[in-house]
Image 1 (cartoon, helix red, strand yellow):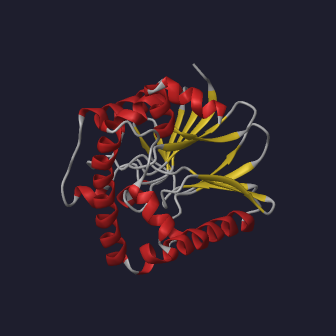
Image 2 (cartoon, rainbow, N blue to C red):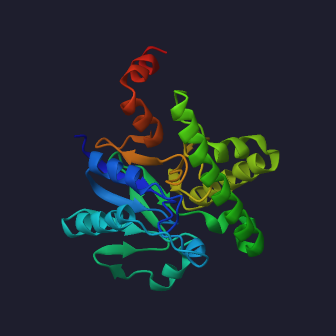
Length: 261
């Protein structure tokens, strides 16, 4: 079982039908760590105001995180816009889980990264809340459709994981420009603080790349792509695509094909 120094997770959206808690539990079992940073939208209070979908697996996610905190792992929650109600309790602790508005994390190799959800750099969320709420409903619908599409693909024996929501984002030019503007704003914030990079969430687009002299990392999400970032013991960062990994594990012959390609 691999041991890593830190886990970075965002946009889990507990309390919604789209939350893939079972896959997250698999991921957490695979990666014991010294630190677990939950970078926003962990509990989706927006969606829960419309309807609550809380499964035993989602309950287990909360219990597992609390247990890891009790057993000595550092667990920190940085609220996002969907769980912004928790911002009223910053610098407090919830069952040994720290709450912070943002955090500067030093990697094992000495590099310093800003940890922040990122919604404050989203002009739609900040200034046009009703548009953000409408977009949230539309995204939830796309994710639900994707569940049906994934079932059909499995029945037809089609390999690989395909995301309808991700496809829509890539095809809509304005959405692509929004992502680019968001990344530029987040990187600018890290540069102003004199840091080496930023790890954020919010836009459900996992990424890890150099932007000039800084590193931009985005955790992705656990409603669609099932991605997270791990910090290895030497300070190296890696994006883990758990949905793709699970698909390969279910079909070993496809794993061989992927390794050969």
